[in-house]
Length: 262
Image 1: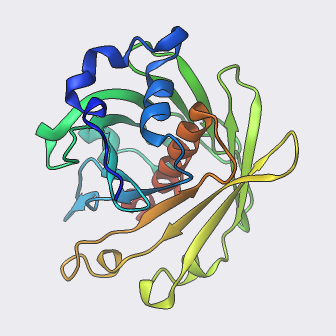
Image 2: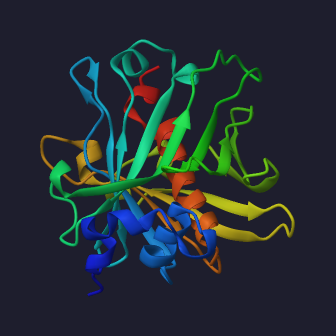
């Protein structure tokens, strides 16, 4: 089983942000930790609601063997979580390095190296559509932007832009997939989001939503749903981080419990 070496944990906090040849913090972390991995899994660790009160989400990013790579913590305030309409909601997340033993609570968190920010917008139909900015920490260099353009009720679209705001990738998923109509693990239901390169028209990445028993009955099982990222032939670390961020964006927009209740 592949393990995360010690230099990826808390001991290496200060060198992380220097980066060889001017490489940014997030890009360097992706080089060292994601490396040659072509599959990762973004797993939800707790449901974002207790009775009628929302709390911040927590996710773990794991490799295909189950090793912990990163922790992702939402950092939205109470007003943002509970009082805003779904299309307008603001939220933010930080992605943390982990200690060599993986996640075991906040004490195992290393330095944050990636920040996702979704500002509040007055969204109505095609006006002021949601956008997430993905940036490195602490430099705040922008890696890219994720957009939720207006789409009809049959298909859902998402656009991925680079740091220069040029459109790179796009996904278009049908709402009538089995995993949306029947979100039960016993049915083997999944929801697929193919990511297409707009310059070539070819599929470069596939994101797959998988349900687990904890989604159906949180009192009976702890395992919650995950979004699996298949990078295919993708090797650029910045794009890999953007695809991981895209999985988090899809989770928040389509599957977060506070989104589904409105």
